[in-house]
Image (cartoon, rainbow, N blue to C red; front, side, top):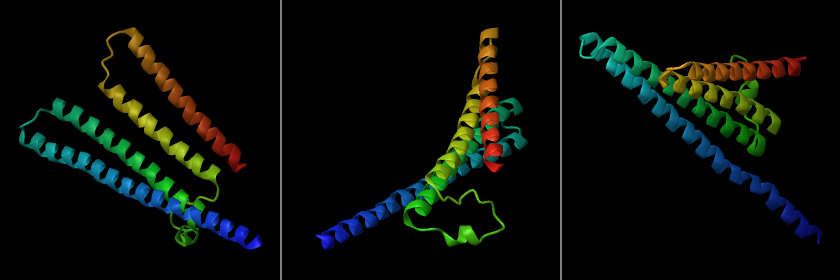
Length: 175
């Protein structure tokens, strides 16, 4: 009976390796999003050449550039979420990454020791994604009356509160 128990426990322990598939696809998804975000920025660079030659007017270019660059930032942030998620899953389920532990030059944002740390890191980046998405929609919105300005103000207030709460929880955790 003890042998069966050992075999089952070994199989259960080794089943954690299936998470490696999620790690690979999270990293590949991050790479794809970085490429897509870079294409957004490249399109702005291409249009800026048309601005210099006078083919396109400044106002039209300005709106296009802001929208596409903010979209690129949004895409890069989502890629960051996937990267942190993939590396965090690897560290939690597969193995510690020695390079993260040894590298003293870079920040420790990719270092994950617990599931709570991974959730906290992801929550911060996801909040930034939501803020950038709010900003992207706020740029395109037409503010025609006081009600729409009030809604924008409430949105800004809620964003400020969420940033304050994240910052407050960080300072409490550091003390």
